[in-house]
Image (cartoon, rainbow, N blue to C red; front, side, top):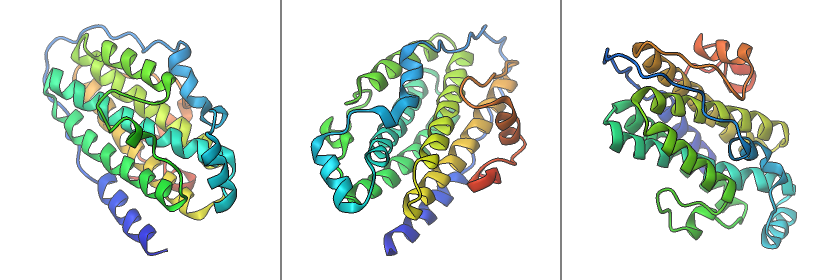
Amino acid sequence: MPWIGVLVLALSAAACAPTQATTTTAAPAAASPVATTEPAEAPTEAAEATVPAADVTAAAASGLTTEEVADLLHMREEEKLARDVYLTLYDKWGTQVFQNIASAEQTHMDAVKTLLTAYGIEDPVAQTQDQRGVFTDPKLQALYDQLVSKGSASLVDALTVGATIEDLDIKDLNDALARTDKADIREVYENLKMGSESHMRAFVSNLRAQGADYTPQYITEEEFQQILQGSSGRGQGQGNGG
């Protein structure tokens, strides 16, 4: 379809947008990992979300499964969560990496919105009028509140929150890819994953510039190291979005 080609070009451009590392050398604040309590774990169960009856009908009409619909709805709001957290942390700390990546997350949101429109699925972001920090999914709402609170404690904590969001996003994209064989959906998810890997590298680079580091909470250590080396991503993990 003509729209998917335009969409892929936009995503590829966003994935390659530079995200410069912060060079501030102030003494790092101690950063504890973001707590992996129920709010943090729950978003990985996107396929188990309750799908509105209207979306079940849309799924049947378009050939999507209810799991595919649930994943699309979840990814739309999860990308919004990333954008909203980064904008809030940019307001707090003024660190450019947050503003740069927030712009890329808007592109990710738009990509998923295009799929929702194509398949006739109601947009959850429209239901909240795209208000910053407001979500239809109560688990994502709780996670947003938790991450903003954590990231407001120190710059190192804020960068750790950024890496955590990308960690979770990559895990959820891996899961969603395993649940669909639709070429257009897979194309978007694979490009989103490339972007998230680029963002992960940027946040880890910024953390290391602050004398800190990140330990993955959702993806495996092996996948994490592949991402840092630029050898994970599209399809089999060969992305180099930077």
